[in-house]
Length: 401
Image (cartoon, rainbow, N blue to C red; front, side, top):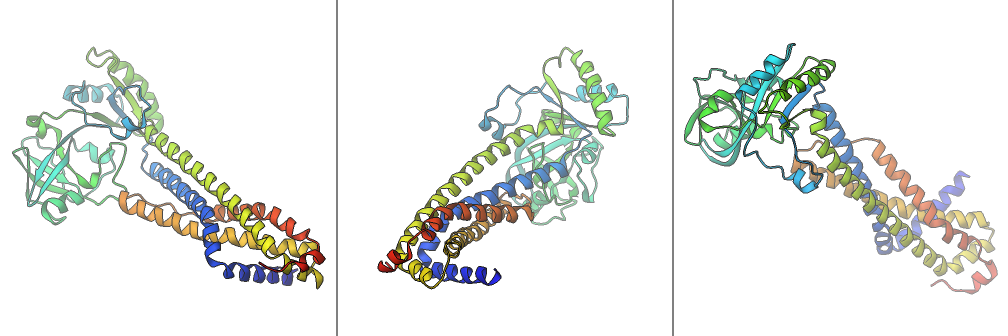
């Protein structure tokens, strides 16, 4: 049996090598389908790992009640707020209303031009307090966050420091924000996955004490509330929701959400992209399979004489069937290899352009291999049965084309 398999493999390989251009073009449809599968599973895995590693199940976020919209464009193009029901008193009210140890911080973004040694347009300054570092999982590489409201200081993200001063060691230098000078007192550690539920890239932000930004009229977009654990978060959520609803300035204008709930729109977007890529993959594989079936039928017709000769010297129906099944499977496997390379290349490009950590798993090549073997067998069955059923005497009479 082993000799039979090796022989059929050698015959199939030799046949495909004789028609290299046809083999390449025929396997291209399968390659696109496999590339879509590899890319889809890679993106899904990357996103799940990112969410799992960054989701804080003990975090509550007080934010404005969002508009009822499932439009993907509105989600992806979220714009900064122009007004907010929250102020410094809201932050204090939240702190007083929680009867447990909690870290609470405002999040008040300002988008503006920053200038250091170089000009950076549309930089993001976040008005926070020192608790934000713990809540957001940020670590200061050098220096410190200054809570003294009388001092105008700033902690820079790693990349922002490079853009402003050409170095990550910029402590003591001055940043100009809307005509006001802020002294750099700290540099954040470089973040591997800098994007998060806040929508800001922490490698490219500046953190300033909220009270120090008062003259720039920052708008509090969110109030971040870090609880000791998930169970405490659930109990605090209900009581805090009731307490805030009693405030006439806040009633009906706010939402208390967990980080997982805030990330839901992004999850929905990924699911939509997954469905679209899956449809493309299925269509490509079906079209590729039909193409391979057509080519294999044409190949059987072209090699009728060869089939007759093999049968005349003792090849059985099964031998002939196996020969052409092998050709079909090899054709699909060559497409799978090409698709695998294209799919992972696309993932690497995505990682380079988006700072997205790519998910590598043995499941992905296993699935690609399984799909290639299955489609190879299915698309080769009809041509192989047709070849195996040919009459040897009639076949010998027909010359190879």
